[in-house]
Image (cartoon, rainbow, N blue to C red):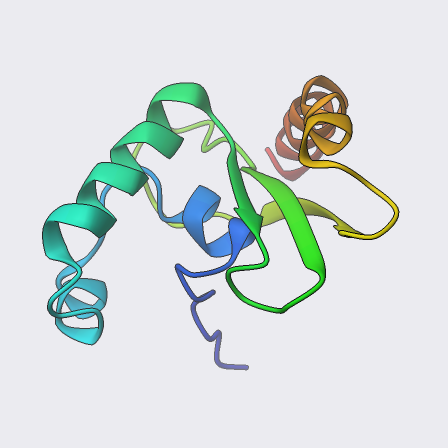
Amino acid sequence: MTQRPTRPSTSGGNSSSGESPSQTWTRTFEGQGPCLSSRLARVAARGWAEVDEENEVGVRSIAAAVPDPDGHGRPRPAVSLGATVVLTSAEELRTHVPALLDCAEEIAAVMG
């Protein structure tokens, strides 16, 4: 089974590539270099990502990468929570970040 990388324009893609973007992503998103690198550094520092209608109009989401227990910085799965803009404000969605981070930690513990 082949695995397709998550797009960095999604909250899941941002969170799972937050450690260090590969050369492939750099080539794919040429012209976004400094902006993308800055965004990924911010995501890595806080431990989660968000998008607000950047990928799909009317949808916002938050995501956290499942931690790599070996500390090798390998790409990992991400946990994401999405909501419609009409029903959920960005502030309300952000209140779920602690639970999302806990969920990612629990998955990491099970994955080993």
